[in-house]
Image 1 (cartoon, one colour):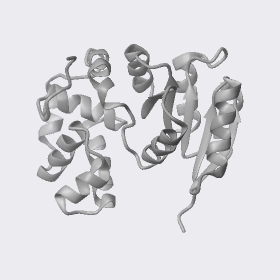
Image 2 (tube, rainbow, N blue to C red; image 1 turned 180 degrees about the horizontal axis):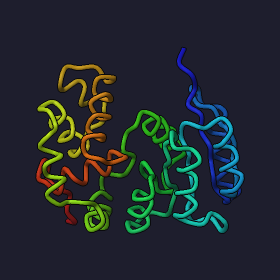
Image 3 (cartoon, rainbow, N blue to C red; image 1 turned 120 degrees about the vertical axis):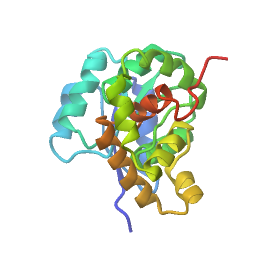
Length: 223
C-alpha cells in the first residue's frame, strides 16, 4: 500500500482551518501533519519530517505574504505548495507561482474539491482553475524569460518531450497525457523532469509559460 500523502495546513482562519483538519484526518490516503497559524512554526515542521503538500493562506496576518511562502519553499523544497486565497486575485497568484507555488485554489471551493486538489498537487500537477489561466498568464508573461536562449532550449527538447510540453500547456494532466501517448504516468513524469532541466526552470507552470510564449500551444486569453 502506498504511503499516505502528508499534508501541512498553514492558515489562521480558525473555522476554515479546523474544517480542513477534520477533512484530512478522515480522508483515506491522506495524513494531516499539522494545522498551524504562522510561518515560523511551519518552517520548523518542514525542517523535521517534510510534508508532501502544503496548503497555505498567503493573506495571514503574520505569514509574511509571498516572502513567507518563499521561506517555506526553502525549508521544504520537496513539498508541493498550493496557495489558498480569495478568488479573482490573479496578481497574487502570479506572485505566488513566481515564488515557487505549484498552484492555487480559491477558498470558496468545496472541502471535497480540496481533497482532489491535494491529490493532484502530490502527483505534480499544476493546480489552478482553468478559468483563471488567462489572467495569471498575463501577469507571468512579463517576468518569465522569453529570449532567444529559451527558444534554443525548447529546440533541444526531443520529439516526445515537445509532445508532452505541448500537452501540459493545453492543460492536460499526467494520466491523460500517458493515455494519449500510450506510455505510463511514470514515464511522463520522467520526461517532465528532463524538460524542466533542459529549460532551466523549476516548475511546470514556468515550462508551460515558455511553451505559450514560443507558440507550442495557444496561450490563454481573456474573453
